[in-house]
Length: 94
Image (tube, rainbow, N blue to C red; front, side):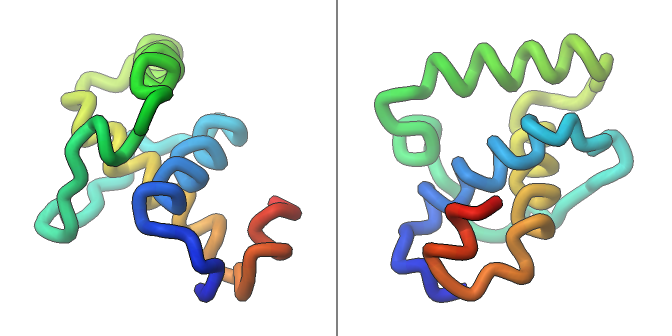
């Protein structure tokens, strides 16, 4: 994908796509040995907004994993939804 966006922005989009679609991520166990982003880099100035949305998702789905595992699963699921994207215009259409 060549959107010109940084990984943290793409991860935010992936999270939002997974949350928007109410994706079932319980059985998603992504490889967590990859790149690591701290909360302030991943979520920026909107850290608290993401935290509330993710915690609501965890409560709604009764997911018992750690918040880090849920975030990784949301990113994995959302990234899969972006797999066909070839540029910024296609990303905006999601």
